[in-house]
Amino acid sequence: MRVWMSRPGKALLRATLFLCLAAGLALDGCAPPPPPAPLFYPPLPQRPRIQFLRQLNTSRDVEAPASSFRAFVLGKVAQENAVPIMRPYGMAMGDGKLYVADSGGRRIAVLDLKGRRFSTFGDKGMARLRTPINLCIGPDGDKYVCDTALGAIMVFDRDNKFARMLRREEGMKPSDALLIGDELFVADLKSNGILVLDPKTGRLLRQFGKGGKEPGEFYFPTNLAVDSQGRIYVSDTMNARVQVVDKSGKFIKAIGERGILLGNMVRPKGVALDREGRLYVADAAPQTVQIYDPEGHLLLMLGAAESDVPDQGTLTLPAKVMISYEGVDYFTQFASPDFKLEYLIFVSSQFAQSKVTVYGFGKYLKPLPASAGEEKLRVIKVTPPKEGPGAEKPELPPEEAKEPPSSPPAPKEEKP
Image (cartoon, rainbow, N blue to C red; front, side, top):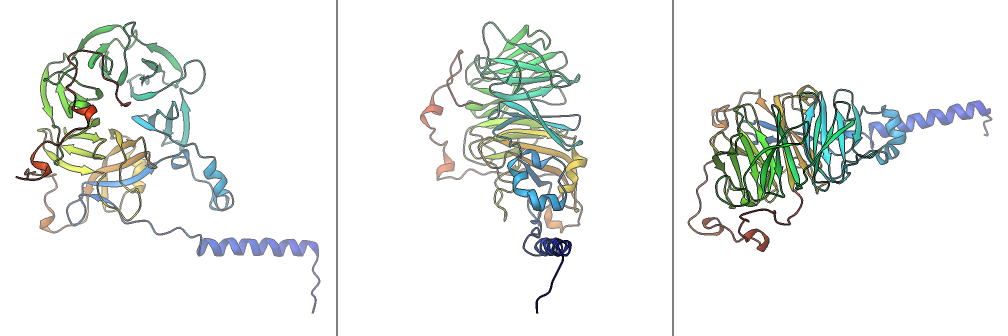
């Protein structure tokens, strides 16, 4: 029997069938998979202190999500329109926004966590960036962007508008900058030292350090951090250590040495400190972040744990590590209900699918057996083997086996 149906009736039937199909797919084949189990460091049944939270790779990872129906219909198109973070290095947090120095994109990416927006600056107009490596933010909102290709520090104001350029007639290759009071400390790859500049004019106030391997000498200083006492931590990359100096450059101590044992360093880059004085060091060679207590003893490692989800919590050539007590409210949604966040740990990877990996430091709330240990992180005791590769210092590649220079200029090495 043939059933006659009017055109409006046919249109209504098609719409109804489409909606039923969409609903069926959403409930069946298109339903999102259950979230993976939380990834903790150290893992359960030990007492966790750090949890992997998520990765930030494109603008879609921070922008407000579209409606479920729009995402179902335009999901592929929306993903194609996402703005990628290409090759991140330095990061800074200010006023609820995460600023990422994207050296591959030649710009600064701004991830507005409060407003759920993504934007960029430094990629338009006359003041375009070429190789932005690191940045820091002053109390007035000025951003100091280190550009190794320009050999200058580009300063952008609170509204991300270009304000001024800091450079020297003698030249410099700034790898990182740190604003302490009214002085700008700059890690300079050209001189293998630390320049102290006037942040307004760029005038050299003083400098310290030179190429070498002795205390207070540097070989490819790439990153800086400061603790609550005003001491400066310098990532002495090609000497495989972190040196601690005061603001005049006087040597205080060194943390780490070249080697392959836990707690040793090979190619340290990003450095950061939390309020308890714990030191975080991103090492590009073992592709981990090592955490040390204030005395320089190893406490924990990030990035080396296995996960059921590919790339979850793993690091590939980590470049920078940053600690922020700002933004915890936003990232709490990604934490386990059994884990209370205290601060955030951001790690950038320049050559990986995972660009910015976010971890959270905090407390595990559920009761654990006595064997799980105390709340305080315990020092990892490392006993060198009597035989085997760990008994002696490993042979170095030819480019790293060379003696550090006793004077500038710096060696031609990979970008920091």
